[in-house]
Amino acid sequence: MCGIFGCLGKHNLITQTLQGLRLLEYRGYDSAGIVYRTAQGKLRVIKAVGDINQLTARVKTRPATSLCLGHTRWATNGGVNLKNAHPQVSFNEQIAVVHNGIIENYDACRTKLQKKQIKLRTEVDTEVIPNILYLLQHNKHKIHQYLRGQYVFAAADTTTAPGFFVAKSGTLPLYLGRAKDTVYVSSDTMAFPATVQQIIALNDGDTGEITLDGSKFYHLGQPITKAWQAFTPLNKQTDKNGFATYMAKEINEIPDVLNRITAAYQQDETLLLHQRQFHRQLSQTDCVHLCACGTSYHAALIIAHLIEKHLHLRAIAHVSSEFTADTLIDKRNLAIVISQSGETADTLACISLLQAHRVPIVALCNVTSSTIAGQSELCFPLLCGPEIAVASTKVFCAALLVGCLLINRFNPADCAALGQLAQTTLQQARQLIHLPANRPQKIFFIGKQIDYFLALESALKVKEVTYTHCEGYPANELKHGPLSMIDQHSLAVVYQSDSTSNAVAEITARGGQVITLPPLAPENPLNFITRIIPAQIMALDMAEQLGINPDKPRNLAKSVTVL
Ligand code: G6P
Image 1 (cartoon, rainbow, N blue to C red):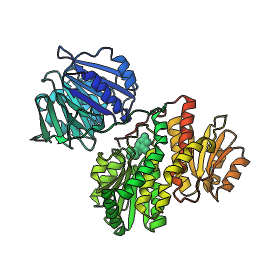
Image 2: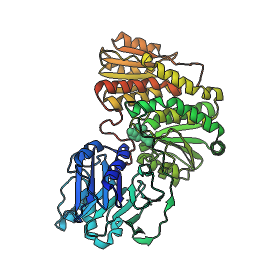
Image 3: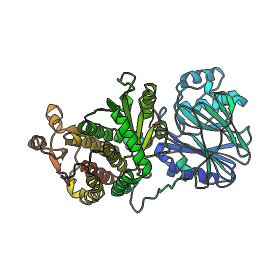
Image 4: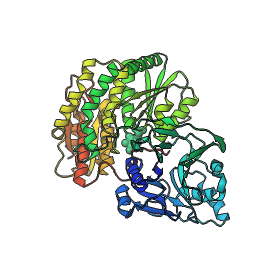
């Protein structure tokens, strides 16, 4: 994962880089760093363990500079410490690199460099890049011949005119942005300032030498031309709107999101056309494969269940990373990929497999400018606006509603009622799940059928932001094992239905605490879409009690771009 942001120009480049990095923190926040060119043409590196606040505190002065590159890290190989933070510099401090991805032949590169008496100082794969660039001197565009893996990076070199070098191998995103007198590089166009009017997306195999006077591009070592594309800066909406955390803000946006989706999918001409196309595809399909990770996978489980129930069509939800060449697929199948970010590497790997089998791909995606959206034949937007908190909340509800609208077997009045139902659920959430005074050591969410999938998602929310042991379980399955865990230190939150009373009795008989969660608006068959809200609020409240920032839980990142 990791975020890259940098700029080449004249004004406030260090401040601009820090601002850009802040917008990329969703890609990881284990450590961060910047490098800039000093007036003497040297490279000055400043790094910090932790997030951009920690880095900003270490940047004591912000001298004028012609180039600044920055990085926010989610550690893959090499521990979380200052030494392993990016930028990484060549042995002679001539070249500095900020990198996202993994260099798979890192060991071989390291051995080659050692044979040339170049000693590496860290545990990170990134460190080989500036040293290999140093050896390549004026042939940097041949770098892809030396590195293997999925990677993007930007490099600064003291021996060249002010500018930077970029390279991309695989599907990880890297963009250049151009404003009047500044050129930017970023992992996400969302981080570009409002002055950026044109962008270039790097493709697999591209390299580029970027200067203010003009840039040179290569593809697999051969010169190519790349044209700047018009770009409309995005409305970032990144304030918390009065809420203490993004997670709280985003849960409270669920009513608006549901109303927005219902209106758009019933009125927008393009969306209506795409829905008709989707229904034609469905009519030619004998099996639907749904692929997704994390929260999006839980939405996939529910949508698969509904496709089988309402359309009598085989539908299988796969955790993306478990969807492999051994999975039975053929071109009569249809794939639905679900992703908030649209950049999840495990889901992108599924797309490659599906494309190889010529399976049509439909995406349910929140970021419509993302790689997953671009690789799909049809992309249905989730219309949530930016989701910043690592734990996904509003997008889960949005994916469920879009899935239901695509299934097209529900009463429009029931869809239209969901915004109000979400509002009522928000108001009643803390009465529905009233946290016990004694904090439970282990928590079980249980339910049947769709409620079981909600239980899985509820447990994931609590795990993500409270670090408490928590599991989602099918109600009737408790007696086949997990009941042995129940004692006075455990809490079971039960998604109540006609068939959960036995489970409640079994837990109570063994001294476990039980909270039962009755459905609000049981007459609305779509009520499961808003039923997750009390568990989301429970996770949020527990995080607050524990002093954990739910927007940035330890070890996680919002967008997971490594396999
Ligand atoms: C990460 C995030 C989760 C998210 C999952 C899938 O693990 O922390 O919140 O559910 O990725 O992400 P996607 O963007 O593909 O929905």
